[in-house]
Structures are given as structure tokens and as C-alpha cells.
Image 1: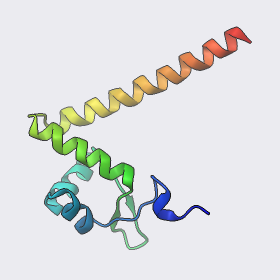
Image 2: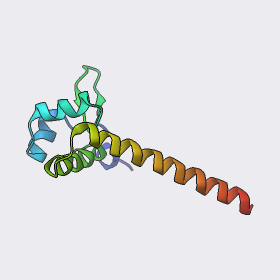
Image 3: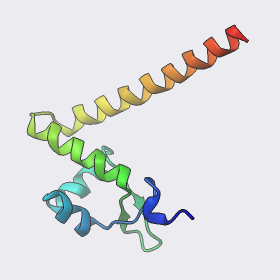
Length: 100
């Protein structure tokens, strides 16, 4: 049986919980959402809910900010990673079609 806390994408954690876990301010998490760097799910009451995957991404952002990156540049890095992953999948599909 799979439980919600086993699901990496399940939005289980609130802003205060994540802020406490990562030792960041809740305002920082809201800024990440406003800059579309980490956009967590929303509850029916419109509260942010973070998944384990979101929390790992926030951890990465914290490290990049500490290294001197801006939120705009971090968002650009994440967008480029997403595009590269999509292109790699496309290449993989084309190669498998070619060998079939």
C-alpha cells in the first residue's frame, strides 16, 4: 500500500514546516513562489503545500543563493535544465524509433 508521505509529489508540508526544516524565513519561500522558482501546490484554502520534491528544490535554491546567484538566474537555470531533459527524451525516442 502506498501512503501519501511515500509519494515524492504529494503536497504535504506547509510554509512554516518547510521554513523550520530548512532554517529559512517563510517570506523567502513566498518570494520563491512569486519569482516562479519553486511554485508549490495550493490547498483548497489557497495555502502553499510543499512536496518532498519541492523541498529538495528549495534546498538547491538556498545553496545557489549562498553561492551568489539571483532568483532570476536560478529560475533560468531550472528552465534550461527542463528544456535539456525534454530534448534528451526526444532524442531517446527518435533513437528507439530508428532502431525499431
